Amino acid sequence: MDIKTIRERAFAMPLTSPAYPMGPYRFVNREFFIISYRTDPDRLRAVVPEPLQVAAPIVNYEFIRMPDSTGFGDYTESGQVIPVQYKGQAGNYTHAMYLDDHPPLAGGRELWGFPKKLAQPKLHTEIDTLVGTLDYGPVRVATGTMGYKHHMLDAQALARALGSTPNYLLKIIPHVDGSARICELVCYYLEDVSLKGAWEGPSSLSLAPHALAPVADLPVLEVLGAKHFVADLTLGLGKVVFDYLA
Image (cartoon, rainbow, N blue to C red):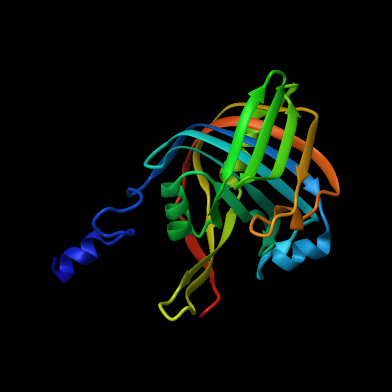
């Protein structure tokens, strides 16, 4: 294989059988269960990288079902997203993500810098309760519950917020000597959002300590509320807004 061909084909690993296809990446019937909670502000500031600023001592814990996603297949994800500000504008910083499917794990880390690790999240309806769980191996580290579709939310307002809010990631790619080859703050948006329904209800969240899935390091001091919604959307590719190695 000549150098020109390598340059043309090299977009993902491995070269001859990439772990994921080229985008765009469209998600159909993507189901979100998001629980907002108050946490320890000092612990929160310790994990949010500058130049992002903590907006409030709040964490959004997410369970997401993705039954139909271009190139990535059918999978479930769970993790923590922190409301932040960057240059005075409100946004979200993804702190931790756990999922059960290799292509979006590899693609998320390599393309955008999503902090993805392999685990076993679940999201389902149990009679009258929406239930989200996260297991890391045999250990249950997160459990979220919500009364199923108790109250409708303004779907149009939520869709506008999803499409207009910047989302931030810390992308790290190591050099062959173990040092950082890439260390960047990346921004991306959700695009072409079509919301199919949105609800709220009484909710709870329990996080358990784990050495390798430390979601409980941002402890639940008070559950503030939860929302459940289903949407079609495109995961937009990102842009670099800050280079830590420059």
